[in-house]
Image 1: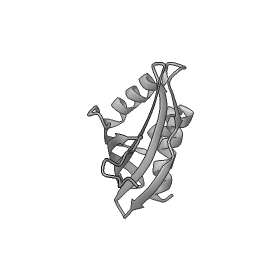
Image 2: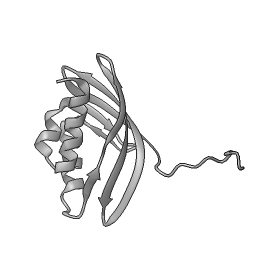
Image 3: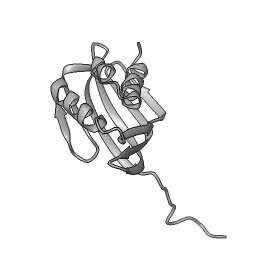
Length: 126
């Protein structure tokens, strides 16, 4: 399995609320840092977060398409758009994940966010 398939498997786990699939792509000592600063160290913390986030029926990752990616032997960069409903509120944002791999598993993820709506403050007006 190549690195992009491993990352896609993690995304599919969120889309399907499948904790076993989510955990299957992580190393025991994984470090996952969300874009707003929360960190989960180790599979146990990641599992608690995943179950807590997905337990309410109304919480749902609606879509998470990867637009671009680059992977070498141990590091991958993935750009994506994330759409979810969390605690009754829908949100959409663009982001980038810096992912480190070890033995075909994810050992670290750092997520970065940017607003989905773009604007051009210096666009030339005709």
